[in-house]
Length: 91
Image (cartoon, rainbow, N blue to C red; front, side, top):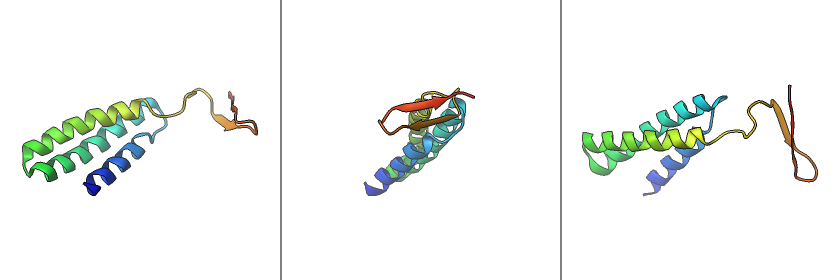
């Protein structure tokens, strides 16, 4: 159980890596698929379980990757000021 939790934590954390929303979606799908296949194969011991885990993991990873990332992609520099406000400067 600890291995499954650890693998899913890393997959969720890495799903948000990417410059654009499409990069994050594809990266999340790939990481989720690999993690899901490993977990499904280990849990059931069959190829069908690995395939089902890969499909479920890819869908979940794509959803998480698509919904992650910066709120303002058109801005290149955002920071938090001394009062806790988010300040974004356009380029």
